[in-house]
Length: 182
Image (cartoon, rainbow, N blue to C red; front, side):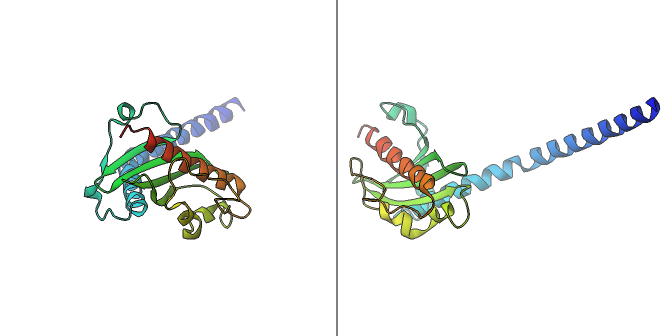
């Protein structure tokens, strides 16, 4: 009886070690590829958010973000600059997890476009945040403009948490843009 338990325990240990090594190797092999894919998604969203930018080479990541902003803005992940404006990558907590957006702001301080980088919202409800009819209502908005759900922003039906998260992202991007010290 004890011999059988030891044999089963040893078998389980060996299978666990093989599975752990397999997962570790898979992660090591795919880590760089996944990072490149995420970066490509970010760049595509940046170009979608700032339509005047035609090529990724026109965008440069702002590595001195902390120095440029007079104070830290919650939710701001990265900023890409170009001669046409800036794209601010922001992150808020939605219903299904983080919502990552690219908010393109022109030199005049107005939103040129908003693009979704990633989200985990419910299909058919919160996932409607990707629709152009929802995202386009933010074009032309600037810091200080009223952005209230139901008045200035038509909410996503059945997805109040998602709508609030997107609105938070947009407000944070505008706030960050105003703090860059132009």
